[in-house]
Image (cartoon, rainbow, N blue to C red; front, side, top):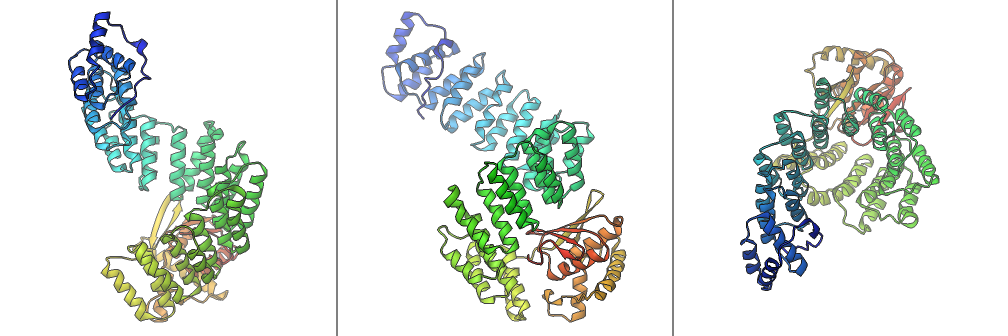
Length: 579
């Protein structure tokens, strides 16, 4: 590969005498690559090779990677290491032979700290090359360990990174931060445990650590830890860090504390488009569409231009509240007023908006007119609308596309099977479930978690193995008495099994979110907010039950399901029964 190396300074090089220069100039006359390569192999000292290289640059003779590898290899083992590194950095897309040669020689040099800089270029190549270099290094300081761990984390290999982390003779804040970030990135359950271990050894988080831990708290709904990190951040003077403030907003939103998120945004001296967009999206998923639209107006008045993410939040706000006209207006405004070309996410929001509102035919026409190919999420949004509005024909149409685009996604099969079951088309439902079994697909198990004193307690549907199950069941039966007095009738239509009504009521009572709620009620003092996280959509019966229970026990119940937040208070829900 030819490389222009004119940027290497010639003033760094000592001078040869006139006879030596004349001899070398004569040697450079042949244009054969083979002859030029042989020329470089005639010299063995860094001094001589640098002079040859100097003359090559002056004459404008092009060189491939092979002779350049020769210069770099010899210089790497001497005090001329910086010169070798400069040569390597200037080669565009080094060939594998040059990688192998330079990795070997750099690793054996007296400058292991400088050698590790190669890792930044190795990011575009096979990580195994970096591992080989690392293993050959005679001296490996904390910086080299951290660099290697960071590269593994960036490739999503948190397990290998953690194995290397455990082997480190000494760890600093960057080491721990790399592992927290890695576990957050891959969704590992260890993402907060590793931070706890960091605290136990007495290390204080830096700003990068704080961002990573807050992201973990947002994912897990770990509000107690998030609040503690917020306090630590303020005490450490990190409140001026815009990224930390933005992450705090996101954390509070995802933990169901909308007011705290508002406070963070209000206290920021400088807000970026990320700050505004994060809050707009948070208001959207909390069912505060009017506030989201008002905040957008406030943002534009400050002179900040929205980006593509901002419009995803706005369209989601319209979708969650059924604001059809406003959604169309924002979608048109993207390109007309801001020059933003809608992406697949924006089209998905529009299909979701129309489908939720029952405008299934319009949604289908919208899909057909899309300038980009619809993906599975687009057809999945249409299928979801078909379930809400019980349209079998359109659901089957959407499913035909989903069979082609995402044939191994169990969720789509389950939705269509549920549509059949609700229509009492038991044969079609059974046929679809048989198809799932034949394809090796299993229905995603529904689970819910509730946090008690910073500890998450998980429940799965039908679970009766919890140590306090009898207490939970007793409390549920007591609640049911009060609920029935208020007119509660179990909605057994959501139990998609061909069994009798009593059995269906029993199934309903063991939905994971109900178990989590009752456990939260018996485990916390009166008046304390219960926060529940569910991996699937909240069913209609649980939704109706939670509204009544919030009034009976005079508590606020916050539920984060797959799509949005539900804040139950005084017998009503923030979603206004539109979800």
